[in-house]
View: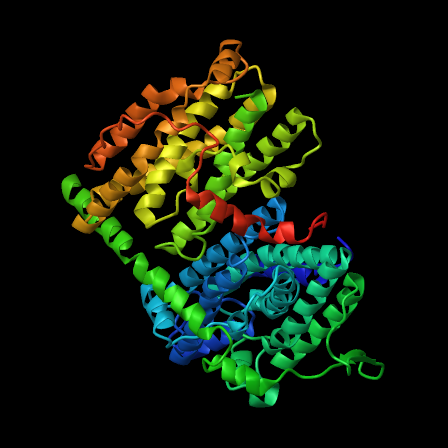
Length: 339
Length: 247
């Protein structure tokens, strides 16, 4: 629709899925050399599965990354959930509810993928709640108007797709499989965001202004979603060697900018970067980098909504404690009676 | 109550229930429950949209689902008060959902063969969803009722709180009765015995006590609590701020 589809990227999801299925059929002989076996599997683009030996640092890196991703889905329900009650038409309300529901579902698959690495969801949730693990800094920005729901779909989900499509080829099987599923749903989210902005941009002058304001506020935080520039990225190199990560932060950021420029034209909305221009020699757009000091401040907890987001999650968790306790007690009673 | 009023009643019950259930999103006691409540909200919203569209056609004044949802005031809404009550704690939400969904399931089940083919078609789709809502809320009412001491107290308090609002589901209305005698629609006032039997069974399994019925006269549809105007103020604010805009 509107020429916006992330079709080439989604074809990559399908081809990653086919390769994953083929990889499952092949076999590398496991011997006594555990590290050697692991290295061979990774080099051959096959998948490490939960039963396989893996270096402790690989396991820890994956737990950190998958958990952070799961937490982001769960915290990410808040900024958009903020507009469910006020969605301006019943159709939009239904689409938004379904979208936020999908995010809870993504959180669940990702926690399940992390659990294959020998940690429980309860432990991960505790680490989110007490601040030991992070979630994507993007969700610490507020959704001030309805157009923000559109901007999150177009830019934030768009950036997430660009980040996540390569993860469909991640060397760890359960994560790759979860990402294939997540990416297929994210494409629908991205499209609904684009459609919201397209409708606003072609609506009344107030609606158009609302859409432009949202893009102005979400553009740089979305660019920052790809993480620090390559020179400052602490985890990148090793993750690339392990084939958890396939492209650098800057490569992905560039890909995202190039895709957005064309789409902004169709939306008839301006990307808030006066220095954005096509560089004939590079065959890519030049653009202004996001404020990485701001990114670091937000990651450290000093963003506009960090406290609110965490407080909301803690309250939901503590308000529900008596319900979870009742469910456990009831199940125990039933188990006892069944004996 | 006219035929349109009847359809609007079914539609508004579903719409207001969806609005309240949507408020839970990101606040539920478990992630699975966030998904379940959003799912039930979506089912209710889907029914509301079909019935509002139909009510607009029956009325014949060119009103769309959005006109009816966003541009009516509280006194024009036909939902029962049960659905507009605040969510309260999880026990109150489950009590509301149990009482509503048992009623909706009976109503939809019996509406499948009625003369109003549009209502019959919506009912045929919605009854399967309602069966799931009944299952989900019954299981929670039982778990909470027969769980810990605290959950039992909360669940009993919730049932006591919501019970007086259930009468309105079974309002006796002469026009609706006449339409039901003609086979056009189902008269909700006939559903009470089956509803009570189903609800009683759940309360008994949950070790909860059914409250005594009050003697007060039945409140008619169209009469509301203070909660509805606030709910609508939030639901309608953006739509009303941009008259005539497309979204």
